[in-house]
Length: 306
Image (cartoon, rainbow, N blue to C red; front, top):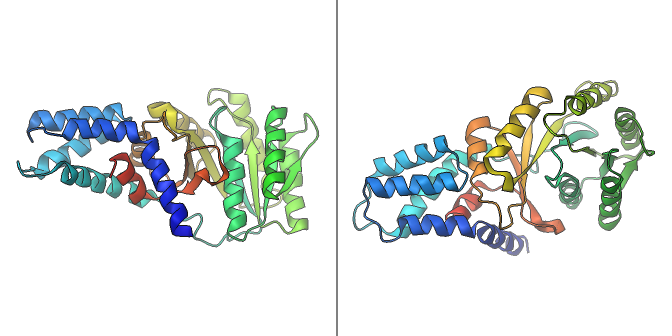
């Protein structure tokens, strides 16, 4: 059963990245293996949001490979896929395969408005529940009543515990109470859905710092994970978000959402190359099972349409 689900998800990734894989195919198909051929592939990779430096690095490897006239389009694609896989493989996350070392494991989920953060928190909790954990959702986005209602909806749908504060409640105090609740009720994971922070809003970033300080009153090692949610459709603009959150709050792992047709897909590659952050999962739709642990081999093959 697990294999069937995985194949279904792989097909969805291929479909999501179809525009990019088709453009790469056009840049390869029927072309003479010369400098113009390499330059065209490099340009195509840049347009796919792979980034200038990463595209240049891949183009050099293609050039150094010196393909013969007999080389097929599939062989060129496989070579590029293998090189992308080599870039991404070191950044696969072990989040789902390891045992949590804290009880509860306190996870702070951050990101800017519109990146799909609240829905992703619910999907992540669903995966953890299926894996035998007992997550507690924390509705710490007190700026938006809609976000709280959305998280309550998902908690009821999935069958999860949730901690909700009063309207306008102090976020740090709410988080503090949620950790105490988790300890009392036996939740082994606390997933905190924070308000969407525009990376240029210093006051909101300061509030996250306050949340971190308050956590440490209960557990000096908290938060145990800080997960940044990024929108796959923003392309290279995602780098600016990583820069700010990394310098102000810290980031342990990233999740890329909205890889469902409009995203070019390459930003994930350039993010990995630049920041070396583990990629925890990717999201390709609105359904609960549309978030899956990141698999470098699947992704590198999908972006080439193999």
